[in-house]
Amino acid sequence: YTGNGGTQNISTSFAPDFVWVKDRDNNATSHTLADSVRGVNNTINSNTTGGQYNNTTYQYNSFNSNGFTVTDDNGGNYGVNGDTETYVSWNWKAGGLPTINTEGSVPSLVSANAAAGFSVVKYTAGGAANVGHGLDSAPELIITKNIDASEQWFVYSAATGLQKFLGLNTTTAATSNSGVYTSVTDTTFTNNISSTSRTYINYCFTSITGYQKIGSYEGDTNDVFVSTGFQPSFVLVKNVDASVSNWTLWDDKRGGTNFLQPNNSGAEASGRTVTFDALGFTVD
Image 1: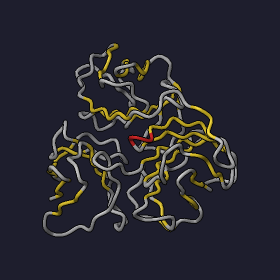
Image 2: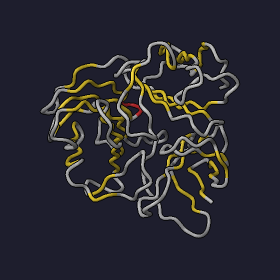
Image 3: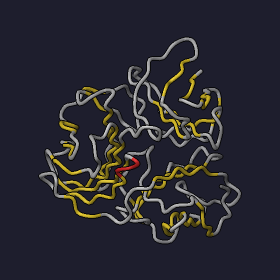
Image 4: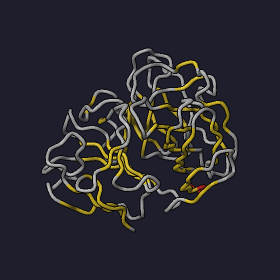
């Protein structure tokens, strides 16, 4: 969508519970993320270590039954509706307003859409925290952020296992896990990030046949076809071996030749190409 410098409603055709927006034109505008568990005015940035910040005047005004409302932030670096700026928005449907989940040793606030393999989980704890995630099977991808203070993002992937983790805001390879994620089951997961009590938001994903796929592949000097079993609309990739490698994100609305990088504020670029196929995608 294109920003108008004021207030506008963005249509998604459903009520989103997780909204992620990036200015495609601006090299200084952060990725801005909001969800229905933390509340529409509380945003975080995938490319920074900063905690959650609250803005009741600008950015996201509301989550609606068919989309969300955005307002200009007067030219700031976290804008989602700057005049004539072009934006991309990725949206997920969880379970609406959160409920208390007591399946773990620590209660969590959860908005879950088990049919879509996605949930938003918030909890407060220090040390090892075992929390319910609300899905029908073990998450294969968990993206975690401390929202109280400055701290890196942590990412669990079934492809790298409990032995390693990634950082959404970093370029580093998968790092040996010193207890960050210690257990992932069909009902709960366990984080052990800080001995100090902190509040964490977690975005949990698991594969759903014909809809969503979390996995891994080996790169090659030639094109590589990655099978998902359906034609994807959103592809997020990270090289887990290289010590300096950006995350790369494509979608079928912007086209497979245009990518963004969740770990930095850079504008949309080209040069790394994905082709969306009927049963997966091909990386050049």
